[in-house]
Length: 304
Image (cartoon, rainbow, N blue to C red):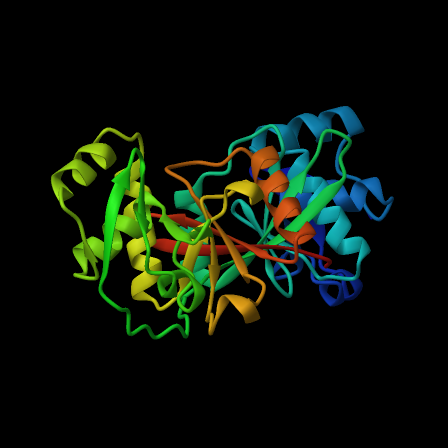
């Protein structure tokens, strides 16, 4: 089947089989194809538009993210999807966002697409042209932890607070119990103090300590938001994240697995770092929540 290139599109005579397979847009007796569709059809021998080098040059000019866009499109077509290019996205049963592992993931663009389509699949093409798919969705989080906390007295120990009230740990999972004392983190200490549950002799010292810590304010804002959403919030350090969260903890003796790891980001993402974070989360039976500008985005590796 011979066609031709017409500006930004390729043109073929209308064909029932092409229409059945979901290619292009029909206008009158012609079907107009996105450059990626034209390239796919020519590579498969179903159509001819230009010599291969000329066709490749044209597609490179028209598609900013070529060739990774093509690799994802071809993979979806080979899996039986009637995939259609749509701007920088590919529309199939789900919405796919192709990107090279060498590029930056622009979070604002990702969030805009999620708001439009509800969720999308981030398709990252690595340097060997293999594709890893991540389902990305915005989450409205809500835990189940309802607390009636006791009032406790504590004292500052350098960058921590210690208290003799072990109930705050054993029943509510604040801090860690060490040698009959409970050691509270700075996030926990400030939260308990500001909500009237912790008495300190020198609260100004606590504020002085946290005021000198880099990124404390941003991380504390997220900590407070998660507490407001009724989660139990603990450090995620050993899992390579900012926090790990539990929907509900009845007692430390019957401690469930935390469901999510929370990763606070300030801007765009490096695909390799995202892949590492998702892989680590999955390896410990947790899901990765990325928080950015008061939004929580769930990243979950999927098969398509």
